[in-house]
Length: 323
Length: 39
Image (cartoon, rainbow over all chains, first blue to last red; front, side):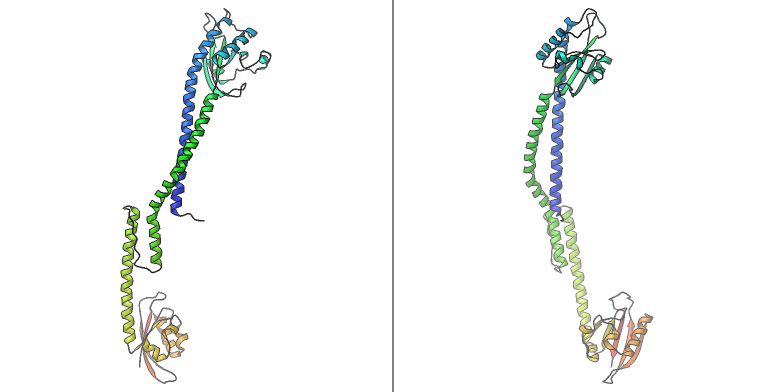
């Protein structure tokens, strides 16, 4: 099945529109996500400072921090107040307390030394990362900072806060859904104007095709009319000019042919015209009478077949051979 | 190139004088040889 140019233009335009809307939707969702990450980062920064302050009583004067039930209880309490997942990590990566883990399971929590935010915090005193929590399974924004004891220059442990991005993810999903609906409606509304515009663009071409078909059928009066003033209109004008010239040439040839036939008809001498292979192209009425043949029965046939006259055949052969 | 000859028509016994002339065209379906028959 072949599509008309009108439908190719329509489908092409609609595909471009659909791609544009999809890209716009993804960019909008991504922009919202980035904005949420920045805002969550600022919130996380403030809450981390407050939690670090709340954990100061657990740091001994030498700056060491031990995994105790009291620390675990305090971490859980602070987590409930800060609405964040709190982890206290030793510099070697051992988890000393975790708000999302029960006391009995704490020892089984895997070492956090290789976590990106922990690696950064150990190296620079501060680290952030956004990844799915292995403990909660939620996409979480993490901030890890060093915990310093009184008069301690270097951190003796790390405090890590994780802010689940569930609200942000939900908002992104909602936005994605709303935009899909809005863009879907916009796409459907755009279908009719696109079809109309494609029809306007391609109609002159269709008119040219119709006129060309009329010309092919022999109607040399066919004219192409376009309302536009663009390349299609220029093409139509050129074709109209070409048709005029063709009609003039055909009229001239027709006139010449009529005159030639009139001359041949009025001649008392018989005239026969042959092509290069000795086939009869034309004979005049005088020759029809001389040989009692008709023009229709001789046309296109070899001269030797029509007249069957050895002397005539020989003359024709000699003339053709020497031509 | 041109040529001429006389032929005898049967059964009428009429004699026809033929003059043949060649045109310059050598394309198929174009006039190449013109024969003029006179009594």
